[in-house]
Length: 259
Image (cartoon, rainbow, N blue to C red; front, side):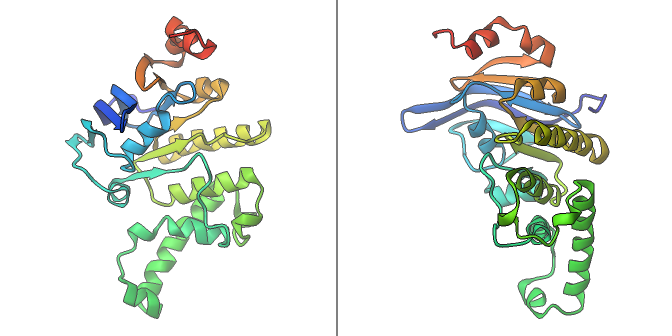
């Protein structure tokens, strides 16, 4: 984690409702540049809704999102992606009939400047641009140790490798903030260990700021610099893993103490 504690993103007093259902209620927290920030809580706590607010899938009724020191206007997800925010999903969202390298290349689309005409012709400047972006994708594939499946259709891959391909596609966007929605879900112990190692490597070697949702508390306590705890859409706790782990309100929430 960066030592300067510079705030890269801040969500302020976020309120999100779906009809009469309150998904997030007056939640505020920040994310430091270079840190791994975990967002945890019981099922239905509002964790994925918060990620959806950060990357523009949901637009809150009240509250502000600040990024790089500026208040962010209402934007669509593709516009937010261009600002440097990438996302993986709880349920894998890959193009199953496409190969690993083809899926990872889709993460570079927003960085390609040549228009559709040039890309269709596959001539001159378009070819040069594609070669440049493909080189970056190959570097990421090597980094995540999935070179042996680069030409394999992802639909034929086991679950753990599909998760790694999805991570590669997000990294292909060269994000300032990487949002990971339950990156360990459905994995066995060995796969979780591999994914944990890659998340740490991405944070340390690429300097990528990471915000992640994860239910495995052992993973959270090992990976996170700071932890936000949500419960029924409200902020329950915010602090270091040690502080959060010893917080009685957090213990009660996870043990199912009645509200």
